[in-house]
Image (cartoon, rainbow, N blue to C red; front, side, top):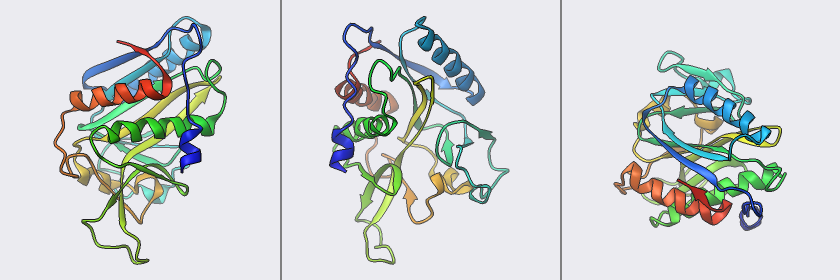
Length: 236
């Protein structure tokens, strides 16, 4: 785990403008988010716009990544389902979940997809650490996990673990888009319509579920500070 995280330093290229940090209010329709990201990625590649981290919330919906299995969509009628080009399997988005779309030019940083995923993991873990939540990664599972000593042990005797953050990215001409989703206070029952990220053996949690009532704007400050530690300065 340490090697994966320690290889994740993505400092801004010398002389490059800082990435824009943008927070949208209300609920952003998913189709609007995708079209906005695609336009921004094209502009970044062309040199017409700076990199951007865009924070949104979505109305309740499911997204299917490139590895999504039809059998993992347990309740197809629960919410709209969107096919998306990001990596990964089925994911839920909805109110109370912070989604951060990360549009960075890896040609100016480091052309290493594995290290980029490690950087995203490190960013999330550092943000959680700022509120005394220990986030961990697993070699056989993508995302960030928390151990749940308050839950029964698993059948193999291992402690229970729940997922608190998901990661799913796509690259186009080495510019990233899509990104991360971290559960602040979503309705956790909404995850029941899918097998989240194809993992059946573990559950899903949120900061409020862990007994940490925190507002979205408050956690955004921790996300921003942790992002700057890993990726460099932002503007906005």
